[in-house]
Length: 165
Image (tube, rainbow, N blue to C red; front, top):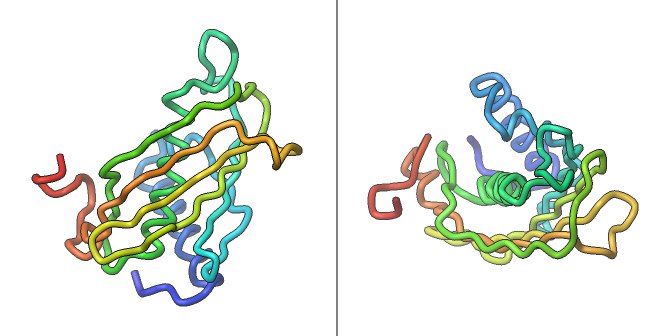
């Protein structure tokens, strides 16, 4: 993947990544979640995606399952991390912390905005916040993550290097 230098290239990269996932892993949760690109801002280092919270994503309380909320956050942050890495591979998650602030009902649309706080040669630090559509000031979930950016340069395709597993 060529280096990204503006928001148009960033959006193309994100959409290419989603198309690749849908084509090669249509049954993967990232594909089933059907992310929608809302905004890409290269200068601000942000990416906003939206996800329809579908019936299959619920827990017994009829709200978004916490593990799936973490996956949506991780996927959003990981795609953003990939935009600021060099090379052709992925940027595997090294560490992630999630805070569940409010329940996310089935049938709502969850927006997640990720921001690259630091894009380094080896590690990218990404922050994310999520809200239900129509209430952007009311956060329902937040996360921070560290992503192995050097993995992209190494051509990592499926997993982190042995020292990070």
